[in-house]
Length: 245
Image (cartoon, rainbow, N blue to C red):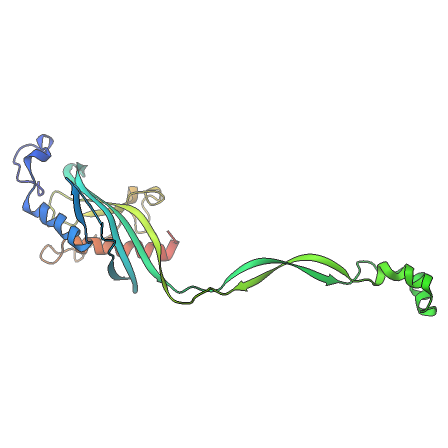
């Protein structure tokens, strides 16, 4: 078991048996990358409010891990694995744009009905007749009708601003052969877990991301938990651009 020096059976392991230096280094990398502080055993938090800036899918985004928990273990793929849980928040830079909204207004419209032929004829023959003109009022008076139209509303400011587009828990598990083999990532909430295996969404069953799957995607001499996280964050941005979530 890569995360501990314990030599007994996996089902006998407890936190009291301790953790390996590789496990401690893996936790430290995440802690330092996202400005985290240890608040209790197995849990770090971002108390400073700092963000880590990335370029993902050609776009500048900021990433924060509000909380990082790493004391949990479970059977994953038939072997005992640490389970990392991160509360991930991502922002992107948005330039405010004009919006459209409905506005009620009064429209002045002509009468709905035309005057009877005989009254129209009298009005033509006797234009100064009070009686005829009084009868013609319903057919000549403009009417006010309430209508709705769309109006363009300009933003108060066009200065770009940071806007949160992703706020979800992320789960990381590790194969028994880590770091020779890459960790696995998923957004640990619906609707991601409900999609099922999907080529379009680049997902395996249960919401596991289809990343780091090729032979050249992971190199133990080059990669670490941070490069795996970079790939997972890049997946989140790509998925949001395609599907809006």
